[in-house]
Length: 365
Image (cartoon, rainbow, N blue to C red):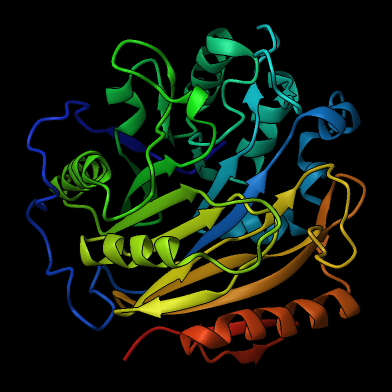
């Protein structure tokens, strides 16, 4: 069962304009003190797509097997944060006009997420309404019944944009989940869907809606604030200038970790004001066709190390997907991932050191 606890925050859109609630100064150049001693490890991974071929393979088997030999490391984390790239339901009708439809059976998918202690499953993405509102409602209820916190989708726009606060060890982590994908799946004032908004800091509506979500997150006085972003085009290895500007705007407005996903490939990591920006974490588990030049079957488990109350480092453990199962990357894949991440992060001035088969990026001053 999950190790987490959660608090749902108020879903109203009052107090607009992006003013932050009480809490530490978010403009400090060094990583924040998070009000606890000792060491904590929070894991961030990209898209977890448990539908279609993954569902066909693992339905009826031991749910933990989808995580392969990474299960132990995932369980050892104080918190695991992921984007759930499918609905979890046995009901619903396909949304017309889509090319791909992703749905996982709740009998195995929910236990699979629970087995590795998922702290947060993001639902702000372009597949949450693949099987309509009834499947979305099932997804919310199945995950809630098993104690797996979510954000980024709901039965109204207010609910979709509502942050949630989850427990990760001794830390309280507030999460805001947003997407700029599939505007047809956007939640409206009185209809269900995802927390869709253009992720552009120069857009007044974005500043209003996202600013309010961040204000409500900070008002809960969490130890950390995470922004889970399903954004940008597929198969692109570099974030756009707008994405970079929005990520930095988030940090300027109180976000401690920017957790990007959607491109299906890893992108670079930036450290901005002592906070990590993972522009895209890639795919963690799926059944997708592999593009040999992009190696979309390779990514990382990104572990945020919080030591003595300070954001200390981001450690990257290489993984790869083999036959709809995530595993620790083999030597060749790990070497490729290390070189790829160094190359893509170089424009941001990020300097990694070797850590076993993976990489380590210092955050503390």
